[in-house]
Image 1 (cartoon, rainbow over the protein chains, first blue to last red):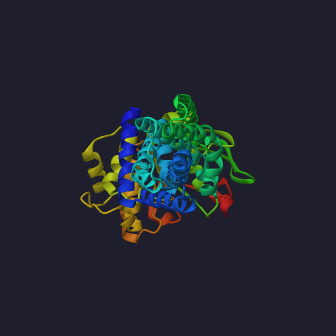
Image 2 (image 1 turned 180 degrees about the vertical axis):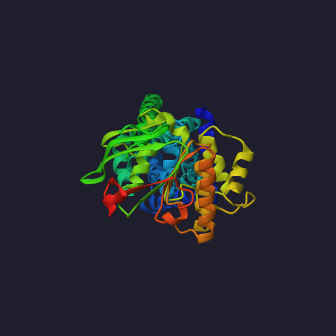
Image 3 (image 1 turned 45 degrees about the horizontal axis):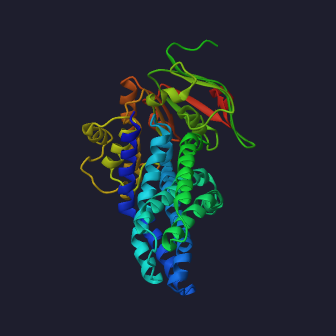
Length: 224
Length: 218
């Protein structure tokens, strides 16, 4: 059975579910907007300070709002025990995991696209370094958040307080990635140092954790 | 005791424990192919756990289960259809969309298979409203269609008549009889044994995690 076909079928199903319920997108968008507005009231930096702190602020906002989507990912699979229907089928578990990661990546990327202009407006941001480099950093950083987030959301799915459990598991393990994405973003915005090292670190992190999560997901899925 | 001819499922001293709670206490059972078994017993007797072990959703703590000649149940998932007490359906999708997705999990892409199954269980294939707006009876029927989507040899049904009106329950029971006649083996958990009286070949009574004989029940 083709992993690609099943991934596509699961992804299409998830998009349809999200389009009809809008559970994840609405809550993520409002959360991200709230964080942007609250941060803008809390800090009133000049242009130079903005460039230094924006990397940290923007990634914290995306990290917090992505947790909302990550919790939703598996909640709809646990409702009515639908996940058991997948578990008893011969479908490979990796297809389910990949579909969930790609789906979350696209949802979080959409929220980033919608909220980044607001960040730029509120903080009057203008990159001194090559701004195009922010796109690969955003892609790698978002992947780092969702690949681990999707995996740990699956781990915490059967716990009673899963909404608390996910950040407890996800945030500590994401620290290297967060440092890399914040440093790379700040490097590009300020042009004070090269982002190269941090981008390579982020890429390495993504490869390692994607492989590890793919290898371990079947065990997590079939845990009683 | 020698296993009966055409044994398709064998439980050999199966124990299933959840922490300190023992759900199955040394269950040994042989089930023959092409028969319909009614699994009966009070709440908490271990009936659902028995089906979950068979479906491969729970691993026995001790003992072995073999099905179709293998004890590695992951290799025979294609031959098992499982209908749980919850619907195992997406509330936001229509009947057809649900079945399409579950068919894809088994590598089935035939559009007419989904439509004919929806009709077989007595629903309208043209119905486009989401399953969340269905009555309990309609959900049960669709859930049965989902379990049948890959034409399995063995059907495990957990309370298919619960919250279903009498007429619908009789229709489902009759459909189960037809499935048995087509050569499938069915294990049906129910509290309404009278509904299966005409179609069940045998009854399996459970009490506190054990299989009990009619004499032991008395």
